[in-house]
Amino acid sequence: MTRQSGQPFDPSEDAVLQGMAEHWRQVWNDAPVQALARVEDAAKQLIGITAALQALYVAIFAFSNLRVQIAMTRWFLPAWLLSLLFFTPLCCWLISLYFATRVFLPRIRPDLNMNEVSVGAWQKVKDAYGRTVEEKLRWLQLSHRWLIASFVLVLFAIVLLVLLPTPPL
Image 1 (tube, one colour):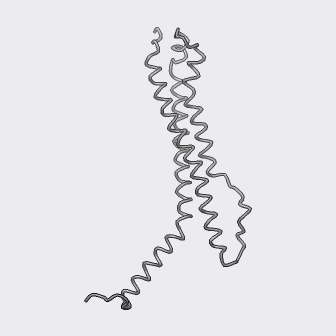
Image 2 (cartoon, one colour):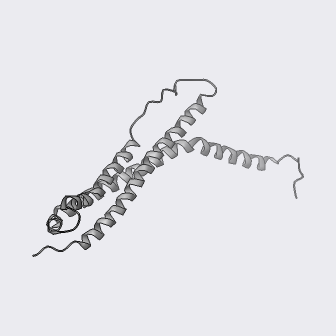
Image 3 (cartoon, helix red, strand yellow):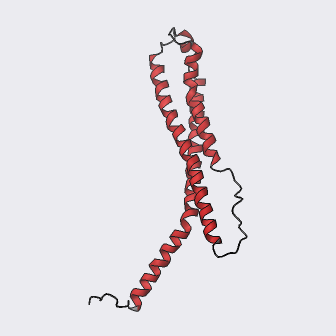
């Protein structure tokens, strides 16, 4: 049987609609808190990746003969500048690490009173969560951009390493 326009729902249909509305209302209420947790989890991952890359890169330099190769090179660039080019990815990783850790720095929100009991207080808290998520997401995106830039510089360093003459044994 088809329902006519304007005809009320039967009790089972009404219960389903109420259940769906309550579910999506709960999702809407939980979204800012969950978004904040996801951004912070992504920042933790970026911190871990960046720290591991730094350790690996420094270990490669410590156990390689790159300093000898650079010293032997007679290019139009001085040896100290070539050495500096190999250390630029480390600088990018440090900047990326700085921005990723900014996600976790607590910030006082003077415009938000958690003890307020007015009718619109919940909306102020929800808006504050939204602004916090946006701010933390900006820090995370900056961290990610610096990480990507470091990959480009590592690729450049690898190409430069291939072009350097091999040291005598």
